[in-house]
Length: 62
Image (cartoon, rainbow, N blue to C red; front, side, top):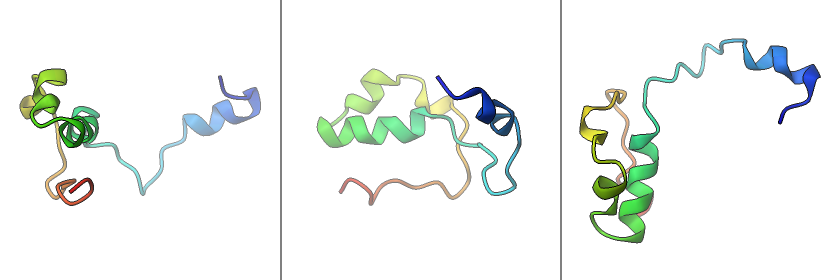
């Protein structure tokens, strides 16, 4: 999928991106924007998933 020359770069950590929010919290609001309540249907356990303290997507699709 990625060129071999870039594979080493994928294993390097970035100080700017530490990955504390699980994808459920990113994609569920998109589902909710398409159909109210769909986020919980598609990601039923999102409330128990890890999320950064100040993560907020409420204004992104509204």
